[in-house]
Length: 311
View: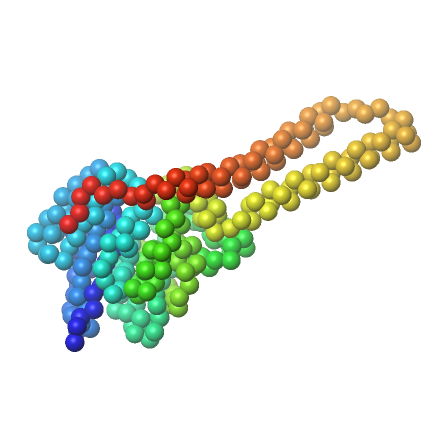
C-alpha cells in the first residue's frame, strides 16, 4: 500500500531561535504518522528574514532530507508565504503551522481523526487571548463581529492559520490567484467540509510577534475590501442621506424666512456643518480609494512572491 504524504508548511520571518525547537517538537509525533502510513516533508518558507533563519533550516536539512526551504528575495508578508507554501507543497495533506509553537503539534493526531471521518479540513480557533494586550484583543473581536455582519463569507472569531487540509482544498485555494490575499476569508470562501477545533491560546516560545496594532489594522482593511462591498454601499447611503438633509434644511430656511422674516445667521454652526459634510465626503472618497488601490494592484499582475533560494 502506497504511503500518503503530509506537507507541513511553516512560514518564518526572523524565527532563527524557533526553527530548531519547532522541528524537535513536531517530530514527537513521528511515530503516529509512521503508524498511519503517512510520510512527512517540512517546508519552511522564509519571508525575507534578516537573521539566521535560513542558516538554521540548512542545519536541519543536513540532518533530515525531509526538510525543505523556499526563501524569498525580500519580505513579501505572511500571506505571500502561505501561498508559496501551498504552491510548493507536494503532500496529499497539507498543514500550516507557525514556527513559534503557538500552533501545538500535539493536536495533529486529533485533527487527523476528523479527516478520517470525512472532513476536507480541520481548522483551529483560540477560545482565549491570554497574553495579548487587552486593547488589541478588543479590536480583534470587533473586527470579527463586523465581518459577520458585512460579509457572506464565514470568518470565525479567533481563527488561526493552523489548519489541516486535503489536496482538493489546497488546489481550490491555489486556484484563487489574487494578489491582495486574505487567507482567513479565502478558507471560508472555497467552502468544503470543515471541522473546527478549539484550544487555549499558547504564548510564543521565543522572540516577539511581528504583528503590531497598525499592521493588524491594515490587515483588517484588506479583509474588508477583499470580502465585502458593504463600505461602498455605506458611501452611497451617506451621500443620499446628506442630500436629503441638505434639501430639508434649505426648505426649513426658506419657510422660516417667509414666515418670520429672520435673517440666516449663525456662522459657527455653518462652519461645523461644512466641516462635517466635508469629512464625510473625504471618508467616502477614502473608501473608494481603498477599492481602487486593490484593483490597481490586481491589474498590474505582479508575482505574489519572488524566490531567492530553494531546496
